[in-house]
Length: 179
Image (cartoon, rainbow, N blue to C red; front, side, top):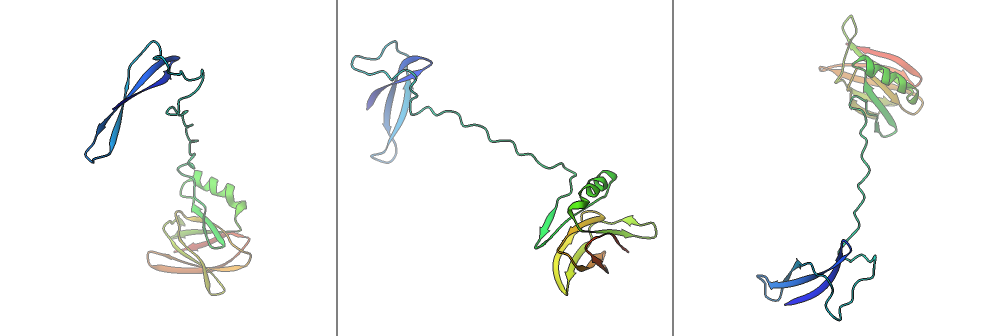
């Protein structure tokens, strides 16, 4: 079974011969396109209108816009319920980035250890208000900036199995827990 069709490619008309062959299931056909150059259409065939695009030719799909990832060392703001927080500050550049964001938050806590105040990370924190836990997170650096509804909060923190707690009110940025 064969049918002759005409397609326009690079301004010239070429016949597209469709050959069909049976496949494993009876009654199903597989089409195979065979392109042969020709100078003119056969008598009685109508050429496509100039500028017409055959239905089999689709315009290219535009590439999606590139996704811009945040800088690798940029601390990520996370949200738990009505509380948002960001922790970091291991290096001086990260401390500067946190200081630049401080206006977006209304509390700050620093986690240290020893007499010299060595910075700590990986501290388990539970933020409590009126006996209810409002947020729980693990720090990714020694300084955490927190945005929470106005009020006073109990910060329960555990480092290496040793718990510490303190009360912090909104508007306080220099609270420090030391092990």
